[in-house]
Image 1: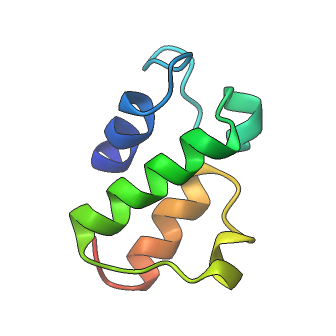
Image 2: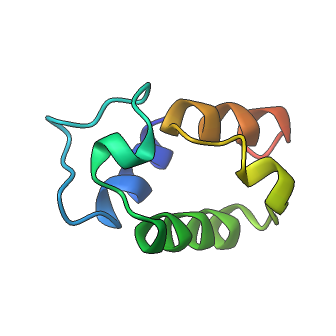
Length: 75
């Protein structure tokens, strides 16, 4: 989870390790749609995967993002 957390924090202006909560929705963490697009793009590049739009609709927390990547066997 640490590598996902790092990508999320690096791509969000208002987020740091102190206020990061893997169970909070991205919007509650101050991550807007543009930030989320950047985060997903970086993750897709780093792990050489493509997250389908239908899956993105279900991924609304860092923990769900991590679980999705784990389920796809990329982490």
